[in-house]
Length: 172
Image (cartoon, rainbow, N blue to C red; front, side):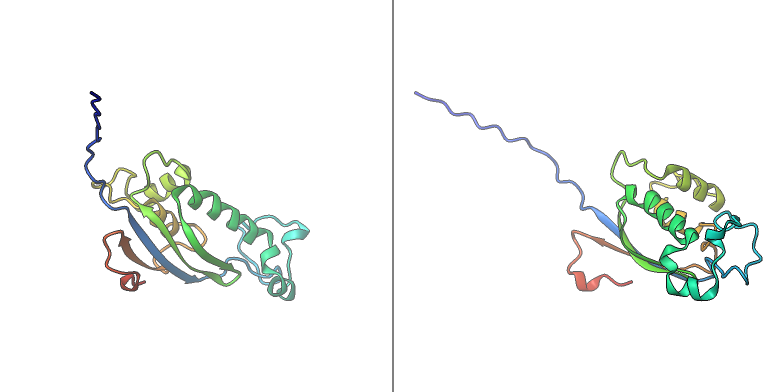
């Protein structure tokens, strides 16, 4: 006689992963042509080297090559990517516009971009451990960014999870 024993691991179903969809825009000069610039307090543009002295035509012809926008792009990527953010942020001399999606709360163990997030939390008067997991590090970081954050940054957040009835109900 052969006895076959089958063991099933009983696990409770995990709650569906929730995602936040954040749309944002703000029209604010992120860079200005050298002949118009008078902002010496901008850490992104306080370099007076020839590479940052762009005139209007050069800036409009190839904004993606401007050192300030290249540094901003790298900063945003390095800060948001570890949080699982995906989407598009358009960065131009005249401002920022885009939509991103990211898991919320962040997966356990995610520690990326903590310095920028901690700075955002401190400037917002909140903390990373604020109110039962309600602190949104991605949103706080963007809302308090020194170049485009502040009350003029327009945002709209929607929520999607696996229990949502259809993709058509996601509104931004």
